[in-house]
Length: 208
Image 1: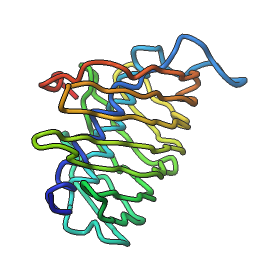
Image 2: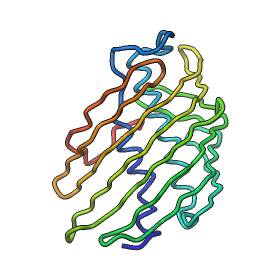
Image 3: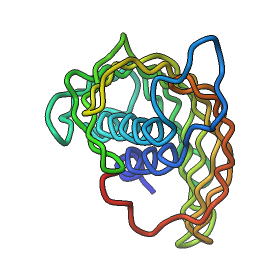
Image 4: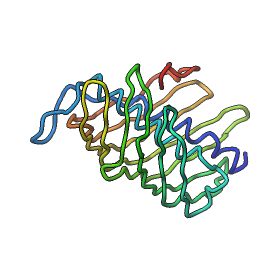
């Protein structure tokens, strides 16, 4: 497994892992949630797509300091700067990430809702991604990453700012097609404490 070949999968896997994180019905902090539960889940999926665009922009650059720009699916751009430091492991590769992601009029559609996202000021992603093949034809993706910051959003129902502070620990095992892990923190004024144990879908849902 080469570093470049593994990195090519990173954006897709990131979207798969984070895309299942939703908001709970509970609220946290003095402010009421700015979005409904359904809207918040869709917004997080859109944010994950934005992060995936940045990671897929130039996999060959995953060797230290990076400055990436990628197109969003519906128009606009996403910029990502920071570090992606790769290292070899016994069975694959690990990426140590410290990225600042700033969308600019970035349009993405998730769960049937179209969002326009801008940095407010930005979203920081830190942590590690590990890709391995412990056995023949068995691919495993381990993730331990935090997302902190805020993004401005617009959608048909209105506009606002979403504060994000979420930590995700997850494993995708494509040998038995299972995901295990959890996500916790706050998102858009909602408390998050999510069990990520589930079967891995073989095909992505339409719209992200």
